[in-house]
Length: 335
Image (cartoon, rainbow, N blue to C red; front, side, top):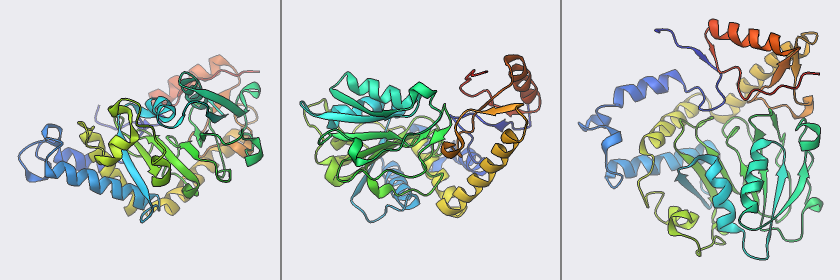
């Protein structure tokens, strides 16, 4: 095949073509060094510079430069963060509070439940995850270790339209699906994390951004490799990092800044989402939106069709026309 597909996979998601072309040019001889980045030692100065530059680019892209934030590059995806977060911050006799707004939020809660005491502060499971419940400080248990939210729900296609104000409680966000897609007040978070494979780059690296005051509360009574402090103190080079994934993130972030940053990309994302939702809503029931309109994501647009046969035919024909990944996380909610 010589023609690229229209990639709608939710993750690993599409990468900008010019980024892929640039990476291809550097694949064998990185920076004219006569060696591929895949072969370089993570102790080399080239890799150290790449790592530090990418951390600063991410803070710049998120408008968090100059603050007391640490950027950690880790492996294992967001699913590993589901466990590392309570390992580091959920101490005995404390309670971690979770808002359940979708499948991945529920997985994060279940993982934390293996480690310590947890509390569900709100859930939209009973209505099929169709909305994102409001969340206020009064909903919280007394002095939670942290409050965890999932800002955008990949499978369901819903999101928080704004970051809730929870007072002095430490707010933690899984932002895997929407980081860099829209302007949000990230200063409300004590820690946020995102698997790169949605908006940051390819699978293989997870970005964790943690505020210094929260990091100081992290446990040192767990294995060294599981500690956030280990990664912060060693600038994510304590062990061999996913160097090539970090390099790809570096290129994506530079591309992101060239496009006009968060303001421009949010505008484009919103325009595309509005076009698709308009088609769904005006189809006379041919397409059926899954999420209640006020909570719809502009990153993960979900719908079903009038019956299973129509959906299978749609997916087959879309693939014949070069559309990849529209089946997504297939949900059948025919009525």
